[in-house]
Length: 247
Image 1 (cartoon, one colour):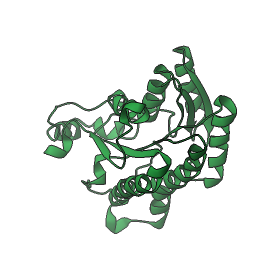
Image 2 (cartoon, rainbow, N blue to C red):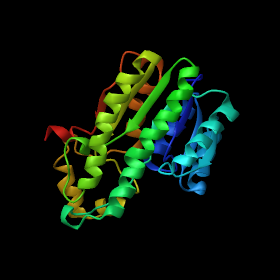
Image 3 (cartoon, rainbow, N blue to C red):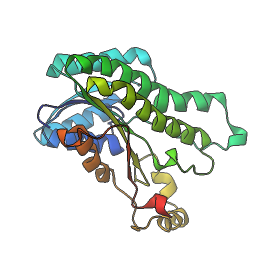
Image 4 (cartoon, rainbow, N blue to C red):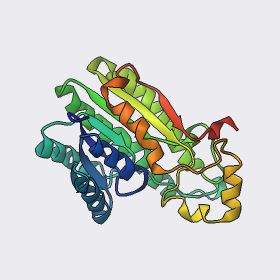
């Protein structure tokens, strides 16, 4: 991946940080994006300390006015842009009957609107470089909704169709669009819930591999979808879930 220049959104921790580090380890230059400047810089230092190349950009992807700055940083720092990982995401536990427009807007703003329009901006740049890879980090809840998270599941279902639509329209430009849908991965988003022994045991019963995933479990699929070995893969979703959807 030494010729790869990647933007990874939401890379201040969890899955995003693991992917950014994995890309840096494989030789790619990484623009590390997060809403927290401290978290983004921490990821950058981890990559640089391992000998990789990385630059931090603090931005909220739901604010469309920040997208151009993300792209400009990649071009100014590394002279190219051929990989985008739309990893930034938010999740709110909200029963359907108590839904609010505010939760809808916050969720869709990051999970769907931000990913859609950043992909559009980046794709325009990728065309000038002869193509590229766009990877969306979704969720097993794009097909199986959990209780009290209808808005989140709808946003991830939207990502499922977003991938197919963009893959179809961008194929002629040699831009490959795919998704990774993780299962239960231990991150700050779910750490509090999984600290409950009862909830933890209940979840394990639903996972054939009988373990909770770690952010590093997503890196292999993310590297594969970013490199040339996946050049006949587009419009699809890879489920990295320990068999969660089998039960």
